[in-house]
Image 1 (tube, one colour):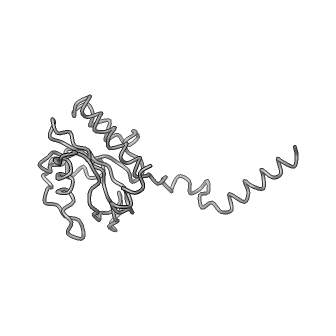
Image 2: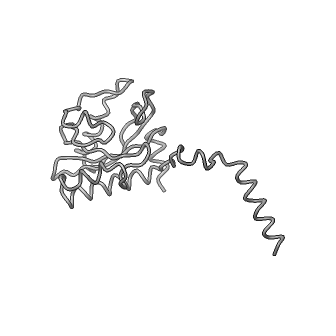
Length: 173
């Protein structure tokens, strides 16, 4: 029995040597979300809006301590004409029609979202676009999963940084 305890202690010690997360950095390094988690987040947010109504859902979706915001991950809501209803990371743009907005490389990413939401499936991964992470200024590669709610003429989305559309599609578990 003591030998097993020693082996477990050694295994834990060697694991900690190769781990880059320490108690001091654990809070600073947000857990990386997966494409499957992003899809579930977007679907759950769309279901919430569809079932509870937009007015009841918005405070829940934008709650910084709620289930729809964590680190770089958050949900956003737009109309089918490209007007921003809610984005907790870009509150100053809420109410504005952003259909013609382009990223740092000229990609019309809001138009991508609208096209998906209005499409035959009303959901899917956007093409890649480049925007800064929350609180930053340097543009990062990002794709978003969009879920349309046609009867309300709105859509919900959530995104993931550092991944192409193909990588996101191929990473679904």
